[in-house]
Length: 273
Image (tube, rainbow, N blue to C red; front, side):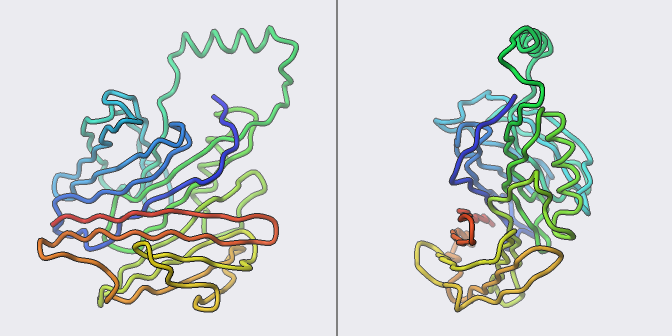
């Protein structure tokens, strides 16, 4: 199924103190579900996860989850229903959330209609969205929201797999359009390092933490690594909110203006002890 280009893609990262937590959740708006808000809850003790239902994602909606291990290698796929729990395979570090594949009969009917139509060109390109979230929270974790330009879903999946394997080790290919790629590290003193990766050189930065304007490009450290422009900021521990019950809920959002376009990401982090 082809997707149409959109804007305002969001990605969520959870890395705050997950060891010993009874629930960790991250939320992201997913273009695969019409920009519906997706939340991924992980129980590190039982190693299970849940995609809770909400008004935009009714209970029972089918969600396909692909798990990736160290180095970005795919290690398994499962389907679940919104509101139901699923097992997380051993060694999984991140997960891709998307809609479920079409039933073979429906897919065959669509293919026959497409083949019968002279209006459909064989080389028509489409854009397919992908969202990657972490499920292992014991160290630095990167997350990504990006589009892949391809003729078919199968071709897009192959490009996606290659991109994930080498994501931060080489420049993104021309068929991949990153919208929000970043890595979060929680330091021993509870300060938070956020590294934002862009294909173009940043011209300006707007970074907000818990709704407060915090950093611009003059406050950031910039570097060029493996074909990526890296913009890094460090949030002091005094601004990381943790209440008396041990619940930490923080959020950040950023916008980076590049010469040709702007990228943006919104992130919410929740850890319940």
